[in-house]
Image (cartoon, rainbow, N blue to C red):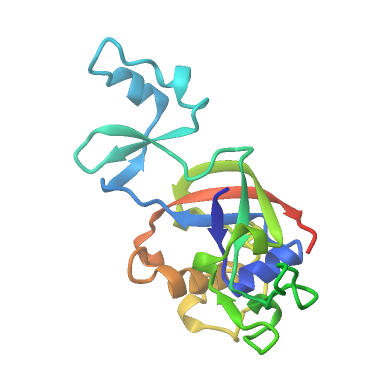
Length: 216
């Protein structure tokens, strides 16, 4: 099963039922200049064995893009609708007895809930390496589509789990944005400022999901 990494604030938003969408940068060897259309793909087929996009694209969850050198190409999203993934977050795991039984209840605690490393929970697993067995949430992918980051609206940011008040106080750098969008932009740049800064209006995958809680 694939995992999907989330920061502490976004894990809390998932836990509170406020987050049902996430955006991730589209990573591609080509420079994407715009989204492509089925008509452009069908008109640009260079081989008689190439099929129309409608025959395979939607079924295989491929999306169309135009590169900076004028070609149109297809690329699958990172997840397929209906796929189930687990939430990866920083956690702390307790010691086990010789028979493998956990010596603490619960056996796993989470940094997003304020937990830290301790004598009872000495084994740290960052979000990057968190095992599926330690996860408390599964996400069922409801839809994936490409778009520009700058297309985000205030309602979109709310679905991302960003509340409608300024986190950390009012920020003049984002004064023309609704509070929820401002919060999302600051969170985005705290992660991607060096590779996909918000001001570059990067292409992103918009990933919608439903949440399935796991027994712990």
